[in-house]
Amino acid sequence: MWTVNRRIVTGYAIALSLLAAVAAVGWVSLKRTETAYEKALAGRRDVLVPALMLESDVRASNVENLRFLLSGNRDYLPRRDSLLATASATLERLRDGAAADTGQVDWAAIQRTLGQWRDANVASSDAVTAGNRAEAERIRREVAEPLRTELDAQFRSLALRTQRATHALAQQ
Image (spheres, rainbow, N blue to C red):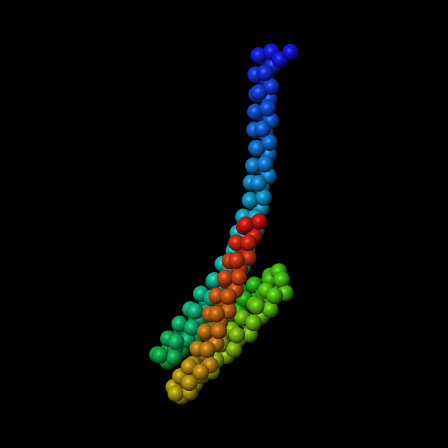
């Protein structure tokens, strides 16, 4: 026979078991969320942040090159070359660290474009040094600027793809 005490104890036991079940489900969900968040954070930390720093170095290098083209002051060239060397080293690390083959293809494409853009900037600088401003402007307009625009598009595409991938990881 069910006494009042037995009913109370049974009620508390059922409530306690339900609480334990909800806590277990919550703990498992929290662990899955933590794992997904860590993966997404690692993707941003390991790929997106260096890629944005790479883009920043390329833009700063462009500014230094433009300063030289406008003023003819050779003091801007070492900074330009240093920024390009840093960008190339960062790009090399990103390319080597790419997990998928498609990622390596993308980084290699950016590396090729960056090399062509660097060569065009050096050619325009050499033309200014030789006193041929018209040739420097032509190289800048017809070669360097289209390559810089292509680099910007490649950076945006990779940044967007990385953000989507990290978002997808976070949603798992």
